[in-house]
Structure formats: C-alpha cells, structure tokens
Image (cartoon, rainbow, N blue to C red; front, side, top):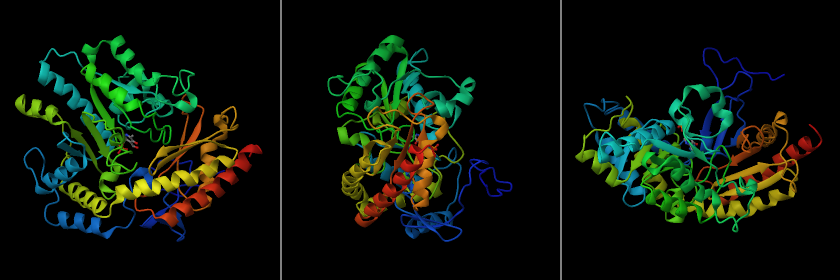
Length: 452
Ligand SMILES: Cc1ncc(COP(=O)(O)O)c(C=O)c1O
C-alpha cells in the first residue's frame, strides 16, 4: 500500500504514486522538504540544462516582467521576442532563420503540422492534396489530441484513440530489437528506406511531412540511429517533396553535444521543433524554427500563419530564452555536453556487469538504459513486474533521479530509462552519477532476479 500525500485541490500526475515535494533547486541538485538532496539525473525531463536556481535567468525574466509582461501578439510585437527569435535562429542550422515562439513542445509540434499544411496550400493552391503526416512507432510528440495521432507510444495513446486522426507510421531504428529481424550493417538500413515505401504506398501527392525525433527520447530512451539513417531520410524527403520536421524537443539545445542533434549527420531539416531546454526550465516554452523558403512562401501568399495562442510570442518567455541561450554559449555548455558525454559513455560501459542491463545507448548527455530479464536472450520482464519502476525507485534511494519508460517492445512489454544530467555537469559529478546508478541498478537487479 503506497502512502500518498494529501494533494488538496491540486490534481497530481497520479493519486496512486507518492510524489516527493520539491522545495528548492541548486545546480544539478533538487531538494525535498526534508532537505535531502537528489541529483537531477534527467534534468527534469531533459530541460533543466543550465541547472537549477540560476539567478541570471531569473533576473532577466524579472526585468522583462517589470517593463512589459504582455501585449497580445495579434495587435502588438515586442522587442524581447525579436531578440529571442534572433538568438534561436543563430543557434539553428543555416537556412532556418524564422522562429515562432509558443509555450510548450506539443504546441510547437502542432504549429509545425499546421504550417506544413498551410505551406502546400499557399505554394500549390487550395486544391493541394498534401496533408498526410508520417511519423514513427515508438515516438512521442506531445499530449494534445493532434500530437497523439502522430506519435506512436501505444501505452500513452490507447485510451484516447477514438479522439484523434491517426497518421501512418513506420518502424523506428530499434537495432537492439530490429523490427525486420535484421542486423546492422547488412540490413542496408531498411528502417530508413521504409519511409520511401510508405510515401509511395500512400502517394507522394498526399504526403506533407515526416516527423521524427533524431534520437528517441522518452519512449525508447536514448535510441540513436546508425550513421546512414538520417542522410537517407533527408534524401527521401527531398525526392518526394515531403517536409522533414525534426522533433528536437528533447535532443536540441546542446543535449547531444551539438546545437541540434541532426547537426551530427549534417542533415538540415525543413522545420525544427524545440522546447524544454530552450528556456532551461525557467519558463514554459516551445519554438517552431522554419526554413526560409517556407516562410517566404507564406509572406508572398496570404501573409499570415493561420495559427496562434494567447501566449505565443510572450515577452517573459522570450527573455528566458535569450538569457538561456546566451548563458549556454558563454559557458560553452554544448562543448561540455560533448566532453562530459564522452566520459559518461565510457563509464556507463561498466553497467553491462549488472545482469539486468540489456543495452546502454545514446549520444552526448542523453543516455538510455534498457532493462532485461536475460542479457543473452534479451527477454523482458513481464510488464506486471514494472522493472523500470523498480530500477528508478532504487536509483532514487541512492539520491539519483532518472526518467523511466515502458512498453517499447510492443506497446506493453519493455522497460528502460533515460539518464541525462544538466549540461553544466562536471567530471566529478558524472563519476558520482555513475556510482549511484551502479548501486541503484545492482539493488534493482537483486530484487528483480529474486522475484522481488
Ligand atoms: C520528443 C518530444 N516531443 C514533444 C514533447 C511535448 O512537449 P511538451 O510536454 O512541452 O508539450 C515532448 C515532451 O516530453 C518530447 O519529449
């Protein structure tokens, strides 16, 4: 029987889970109401990249709030948003110079879907048939009705299935459990080529965009593709006049050791959705970054994006974005993510000595661990055991917060978690994270293999 706190009028994420009360944060640490310190080993949900309690960012937001807190974006524009957009565009790859600022990742994805559709209407006329968005199984793009039809994490979408329009999906590059039963490199990256089959099957005249995460986040923690994957995807999208929308909501803003993750493969998408670390967690944020040509078509056409939320382009968020990006650049945090990420990767190899560790994967400071009942056969624990919950619970006892996920094998089976400390993490802190992780996983292993 779990003893849950009294939540009063607030609806918590769960009435059945005993959430801890967070009281304060400092650097890579969060403190509960008893003063116990926890390493925020997953940066919240990969957003607290510049660490907790940063006064420079808080001051920048305060300064903005006391000069202009709000002016509705349908009648006003403001300097703070212009400045933030310029910072974001200079962080993005060449040719993506336009930024639409919103309040969250789901809003950024919804904005991208609408802009993609509107772009083809503006470019080809009202009769444009391009409206289908292709996505991937084992993905997550948000919690709104629109983004749930796009994403493929079955566990999260099943309840709401009747509510949304379901988009077609291809399999992801899950090499550890290849959906085609093949192995790299003799597979010839069939998962990437399957996009071409899907486009042809539907008819390219109907397909507007392909949406995917460069490295999978919460649904298959840290799942990174073979090096050929993204260049092949880019080529297919260009060949069939399909927009490539990169969901960099978790992977962007330095997380993997590059400004945006697709930079690792020199792939330039047509749109990038960013959020989370874009404001370091100091303000709700999302951003759609669009290729020049898309916005030029809009400018020359109707001249207005048929979309908008009250808090779109709000000055307080903009101030947080500008302050965060400047801090990231000044403190060379993208470089730190690469350097500490390499150290992390080497140290994490030791986890394979723990019998329940199936695969350790990822890039930079975005790493995932897949938990298995048997390292040789890769068999998962039965879902009733909640192995991810046991593992993350044991890590928490060690004072380390990680980000669990389940159901990646078939929507029901499979356990994994993400470890992704803030980008400010030091060498010593990386070592400490690995020590705590090992202790937590060893305890979980003993529990799980002895039948709990
Ligand atoms: C890859 C990805 N896309 C979209 C989202 C949705 O972002 P938000 O929760 O800010 O709406 C998330 C959130 O975790 C995410 O990880």
